[in-house]
Image 1 (tube, rainbow over the protein chains, first blue to last red):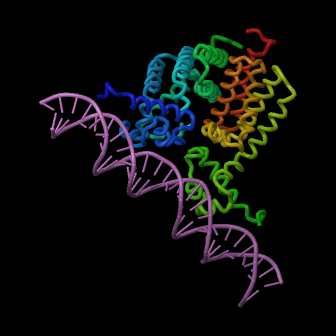
Image 2 (cartoon, each protein chain N blue to C red; image 1 turned 180 degrees about the vertical axis):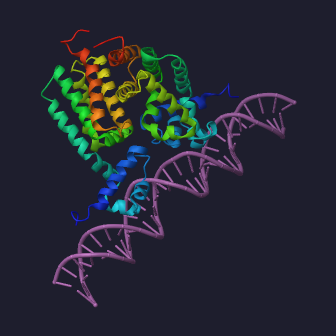
Length: 186
Length: 186
DNA sequence: TCAGGGGCTGACCGATCGGTCAGAATGATC
DNA sequence: GATCATTCTGACCGATCGGTCAGCCCCTGA
């Protein structure tokens, strides 16, 4: 009957997304989610194996897109890698604003878990790409400021329409990376 | 005897700073802190009124510096406000890297408490200043990316020496804000 | 009519949380 | 040696956490 009555399942997922975005993963209890849905805590645990499973399903799509970006990033280098990495991440961050906001605050502990170990590696490669693969600390710091700033801004301006948020972020990215482009001398 | 034996008090404070920076405020228990110090949980609660009091004392200095930056920012406007705001925040973020990292993840809930209400107002004014007081959404997004990125980068590169971190952040800030300067046409 | 299964729940579990409290050490003062 | 404040601790508290489980409700199909 999964196709006839997926209501509760999806309602729980939506409620979890909302609560996690406001009070964080740790700061949200299964009771909170159940209350928002209007069901019992046991029902939440009937539809999902546990709190972690809820999180995993919530992060499934954005992490898949992140993985695709990682693949697209592998063959390119230099200024092209910077451009693809930055623009790709802007798209991803804008699209999955709520989920990004969720990963944001709980980064250290969540990524320490084996289930998310690969995310840390992908993030590392993304920073490397956006820094232009120079290996210089200054460029890594620059890339970190840009990517983290984009994440945070997306989380903060979660109610701003995509077509206002995206151009603004792309403009910042272009400004930050332009002087790093070897074809441009500032 | 506070002046003769401030050891334990300070050790607890230092341990709390370390643990909070790694596992966050909510993710750190008083037991964790006590274990790191090598004392009992009751001792932690003997020296501090509670977990919140520990946090408040930890954030005291950086919040005071933030307040000073806010005051310094009040009389100026336009490009000068952008410069003072950005450079001032870089200084603050580099200096109080651990504490910034702490406030980062727990923002929504902690700032919701009355004790930190004014921080949210100051942050708002800081974003306004760094955006050049234009009131345009795009400029606010830009400022948000820059300030949040600086915070996150400081938290991430907590072990990088100040004299490497600061110039890199200032360079990014200059690059992000330069095109907003009305005297420069790109 | 009734057996069966999916959806759901209240009651309960062990663990851990922040916090309290009476009292054991310790050392300075008289 | 007696007194007293400071420092520290083990034992304990109520609350809440994530998670389990037996069983109730209700729809379906034979």
